[in-house]
Structures are given as structure tokens and as C-alpha cells.
Image (cartoon, rainbow, N blue to C red; front, side):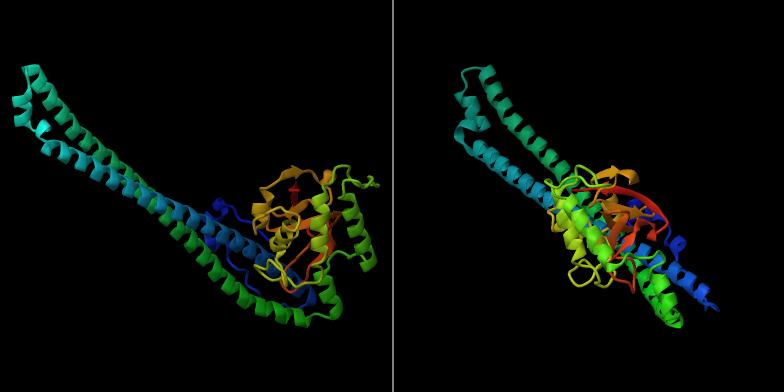
Length: 343
């Protein structure tokens, strides 16, 4: 599932057009077309996930800016009213009228000091009004800018959604192509790299969970500092094996790739964005030779697919449309691009 950064979203959508599927004449051509469409589908799904995250973030910023603008305006109006009331009461008071000040003064200096005080109040009111006006203008400008950012983010998301609608029409062809393959060819398409037996899957996961408890001894090929929370995440991911892939799926009935990893790590108390690229930016980067059970492994740059590493070169992931959550070797995909440790 690909995550798209803000820069990637700015790229012309036409440059990322949905690939056209010409009718294949051989099963090999059909398989190649299916792989092409599957990867495009997954990349688009993750771009849409990221776009939705950006829309929500922009909406939160706009709401905060709008509230700040309203509060600034309210404070300014309150201060102006209070100052105006004070000034009016002082002008009306006999002791502060110019005539009274002149009659009550014992000297010219005393009279001038009284008049100066009254003038200072007037000037202060003007300063308060000017300051308030500038504060309101600044707050309103920030609110307008935030709202414009929302409109931009929504437009990007909607453009991606339109491309996804186009892709869904291609998925119909995808399903038709898949039906033309033999059972053996379909199995090879879904599992280009031989998958381990169920017994091996269970053993790998159990080994990973054991290696993820602080008390567990370090076994062959297992790291010494795996987090106990990683065991929880792996157990949760394992419980999802066999559930269908679904774009935007975040559980419990179906998942896309980043939906699965965020679901698994949420069970361990770690919050991850529903986006492969977003997840790639979290935690601590780790090299491939230092992978530990529970690490997130990424494919593509920016990442469009993510899985949960479980040890022995294996990961649990939600591959693509038409497939299910399963365990695969890292070599299942050719464009491994890195890993992070979040627990």
C-alpha cells in the first residue's frame, strides 16, 4: 500500500494514470497484466489513504484557526467596550470635565496635567482599537488560509477517488483475466514465491512471539532486544490470517496492508497512521540484517506496501485485491525499501 508524501500528491495525476489492460493472448501475458494492475491498485489505495489523512489534518487545522479567529474578535470587542465605557464615565464625571478641571485647578500646571491624562486615555483607546483590528485580521487570514488548505486537500482526494473509480472498472477486467487462468496459474499468480506450509507458518510465528517476550532466551538468528509488545502485535496479525484484502480495510473483517499493520500494533498500544508511507516515517529505521520480529517492512519508495516482520525472513501482510492476509517471505516482493521499529 503506497504512501504518498505531500510532494507526491502534488505530482500531476495524469502522470499516474491507471494502466490500460489490453486483452492478453497467453496466460503469461495475462499474469503480467494482472501483476501490473494489482500493483497500480495497491499504490492508488495507499495514495488515497494518505490523502484522507491529509484531509482530516487540514480540517483539524482549519477548525482550530477558525476558533482562534472568533476568540480574537471576541476579546477585541470586549476590550474596546470596557475601555470606551471607562473613558465615557471619566469624561462625564465632574472631576474630569475640562471646565471642572479648570475651576478646580490651583495652577496652570495642574490643569494641563489633568487634560493630558484625559488625552492619554483617548490615545490608549485608539491603540487598543488598532491592535485589536490587526489581531482580528491576522486570525481571519489564518482561518482563510486553513480553509483553502482543506479545499486543496479535498480536491486531491477527490481526484484520487475518481482514478480509483476508473481502476475499479479495470478490476472487472482483472477478474475476467483471472478466470482465464488455470488453477495452477492462479496459484502461481497469488504466490509467485513458494509459501511455507501451515506447520511452518505456525512455528515461525510462535518463534517470533517467544523472541518478543523479555524473559525469552535468544535463539539462533533471533535478536536479543525484541520488545514484548512486538509479540502482542504479531499474535494479533496472526489472528487475521486468511481474512480478505479490501481497499481501506482496517479490520476486523478485512484489511489493506497498512490497515493490517496499524490494527496489529494498536493491540500492543502503538498508534500508526493508516498509510504505508506514513508508517515508514515513524519509529527507528533498521537495516535488513538487523530485523527483529514486529518490525515494519516496506516496499517501494515512497512505500506503497507494508508488512509485519515475524522472523526467519518472513512477514505477515495483506497483499492485494483478491488475495487474503497471509505469511510470505520478504522476497515475495522485489522492491524492498527498508524497515522501522515502532515498539
